[in-house]
Every structure is written in structure tokens, then in C-alpha cells.
Image 1 (cartoon, rainbow, N blue to C red):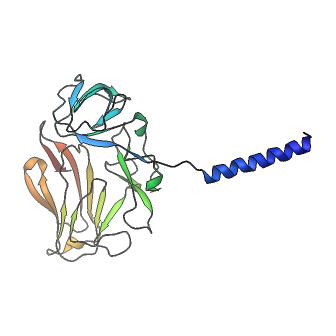
Image 2: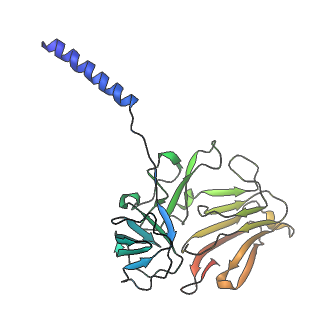
Image 3: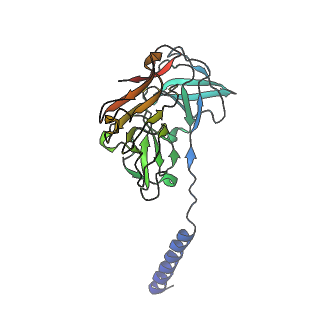
Length: 271
């Protein structure tokens, strides 16, 4: 075969190869982590056998993640899991009964946060996105409307304070909710109430297993300047000392964090 004919053959083969790749792109399958809870307390950093509510999704070699501690799965017997503690640079600690447990293949977990801002939900390799070193848990959401696109929303407070997602309530525009009653989601961080006349209620989720979870609640438009316009936070707060609380100051801000008062009692605390 002459050099000219060889070159033509190579060019044609290359074009065919690119065409084949264009029409046979590999299918993308998004993975997800398994979530359950501790069925019994982990009472010591040296305890290597733990019990969870459900053993579904646990496998030898997978990572187990509880309250900023990573563990390596060594054996699985129904809901009884044998682990190596303090894995992947995390510290072994005690964990209370009811703590949220995540598990999945080791490379489903990350050692940094995603770039703040826009994201595409169906193009993420795995959700949620968990940073094992900080405990930050992120979701890529676009449920405020297609006009806004997807945005990273964190369950835990993150160092990107200026980029924290804001859930606007009582503002009748794209990307906001118009409501007098709202139940905070786990991936909410800053909840801003704007332009509403009358009483507003915010219901908090249960605090169990959410150590360190923070909500920042704002009267962004001064709606509570009038005594008739109140923002009431509905939950048992401050270790049981407070039933509910109200943002009474004009343009006020309230910060809440989840913590425990004993080895079995979780509460939301004002700080």
C-alpha cells in the first residue's frame, strides 16, 4: 500500500472511530448513599461492633459515616456491622442512639466541598455529596424553578458563607415560596421571610442525629415591626426550656444549632 493510500485509510478509520464514539456515548448512572440510623449508642471510641436500624446497603469494604467519623466496614451480619474506627483521617468518638448513618463505596465520599454556586443534579456522580473531614453534606437542587437552574445547598453550615443558599418565603416571584407556614428542610441553611402581612409559622425538623446542623432565620423585610406580624419558630428549644420562640425585632436574625444535653436528648438551641 502506498503512503498516500495509507494516509487516506488512516483518515477514514479515524473519522469512523469518532462517529462511533459520538453515537455510542456511555450511559451515566448516578449513585446514591444509603441512609439509616444507629439502633444503639456507640459508647466508646474503641467499640468496633455497631448496630443499625437496617443493614440494607452495607457491604464489606464500604465506608460508614456517622457525625464526622468515617469507619471501614469489616463484616456485615444483618444489622450488626463490624468496623474499623477513625478511618480516612477522622477521629473516633462516641455516638448517641438515633444518629444518622451513611454508607456507600469509599469513593462516593469526598475530602472537600463542591465549588459553590450552580450545579446540574443529574450530572453528579453521587448524591448527597459528603465531605468526611468537615461533615458538610450537600445536595444539588433545582426545585425553585428551571429559571434558576441547579444550585448546591448544604445541610451543614459551610465556609462559603457568602454563597449560602437562601430560601425566600412570602415573596411572590420566581424561585420563592408564598406561604404563612413552612417546614424547614434539611438542606435549608438561611431562611429569609419577606413582604408578608400577618402571622408566620416556621416548623423545625426533629433535631435527632443532626449535631451541628445550623439554621439562620431572618426577618429580611421588617415584617415583624408590627406587633400583629410575627414569625414564630415551632419546636422545643434550648434543652426543653422553651416551647416556641418568636422573632420580635424589626429585621431580626435568629440562629439555631442542633446539639445534645445528654447521651439521648437532642434539641435545637438558640445561639
